[in-house]
Amino acid sequence: MNIVSPRFFGVTNPGLSATRWLAHVLGAHPDVYVAHGKHALDSVQREDFEKAKETAGIDSLVRGNDMAGFYAASTLEEVLTRYQEEKPAARAFGFVHSYTVHTLIRAARHAETLENICIQNLVRHPITYISSHYSLVRQAERYPKLYAHYVGCVFPEAVKEYPELILLECPDYRAFVAFVVSCFGVANLIRDLAYPRIRSVRMEKLTSDLDALRNFCEELTGLPYSADMISGFIRQGAINLHRTDKERKGPNDLYQGWEVWQRDIAHVMIPSTVIDWLENMDYDLSMLRGKSNDGRRSGTLAPCLGDQLRALDAKHPLLAYLDPTEASDLRFIDEELQGFNLVHQHGQAHAVARSVDVHDLSMLEPGRLRELQDRGLCLTGDSVADVWVAISRSLSVRPELIQSNLRGYDLVAFRGKIFARSRAFEIADIDRIAVQHFPELERREKLYVSDSLADARAWVERITYRLRPKRILARLLR
Image (tube, rainbow, N blue to C red; front, side, top):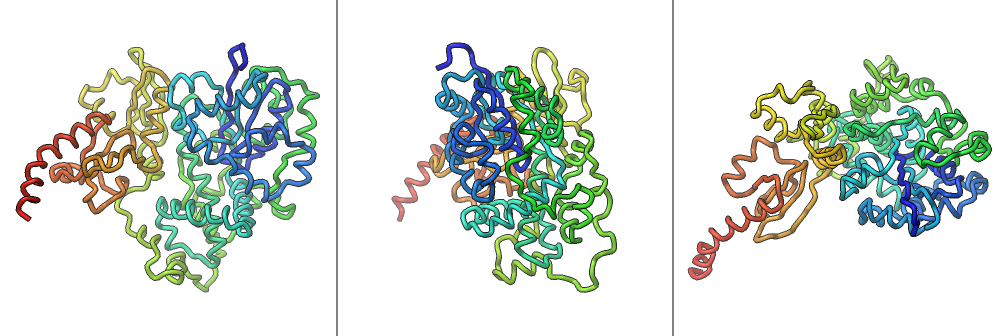
């Protein structure tokens, strides 16, 4: 193990942004260990950059999930320890594209871990990202395991978030699926905007500007990078080129070449908050403002996605989302939370939702502050890292089962709360229960909402202890 305290770094990104290329650039320093994506942990160290460019293709992305199970089952602390075991003599250890901002924060178990890692977020123009990702998903149709992930996991989640997709024209089902999945990657960027310390960098700048690339590498690793060490990477360009030469156009030309139904999908799915954020980074996103239809819509009406789903299965499960019971996670963040502002006050850090428009918490009445905290619009911690973890939990994508069948109840974590849900309750998904129904469900002892796991367990014990004599009597009378 390294005697000197190691340096830890991370580059977060949703993918298809020259991340494999960037991992090789960082790994060009002999004292740096870097992992890429969910590839084998030694892939950057043993892979020859020149040969990688010659053999790059869809097969590399299929192999890119080799370590997905390891990352899913490991805390960030365990991952960083494993990195040190891979190259004990290194002075800096990190990853590129193994996490998004949101999943990185959720992977950390201790706030100090986040405080001691240098993190940069890599972004790309959303139109070129969607174009590359669309091409990737269409190619993945030849690889059943990879394609099953897109069509069986990502697509249903996207339809759940944006049920109006079911009503959009769908002339080609597979093309529709691929485009929705690709736009969903951009839509999910909204989850990353809530973390106040993370700085975002344009991918296009790094791949073309030697000084910007060198400064980026040195800031991340704390080690010097010479021009000779990295200039060749800029000359040779990215490893994985998912788009063909014909598709390699500028963002505006790409958008103009999209079909009307593709434009409709992009306008429905990409949140305004994400557009605002990316425009502040000097990306031109004027094509995503206003209406998607420029008069090219044909007179013949194509079947909508709902028609295609009914053709596959008259009772297709995705059709259930046509009548959503509540706002989706991404809509909730975009329309109500819209990211957070960081406020330091009385020795604590507070993340206050921008929609609240409060910068001096001392001006709030105690009852109002408590209301904001209960609604998840003000999250408090002893440090910025504590607040990051609180935000991550409050914006959790899916409920997480903590304990199954505790005296007839499941304990579930969701959006910073612990739910004790009766196993006899007909609705299994906590995220599909409207908040206004909580009091009635608690009165009926079907549901209990708490801030702590211990309190939720104590409530279950009290309820089941009180009911135990009635159950015994019922058995005796059978």
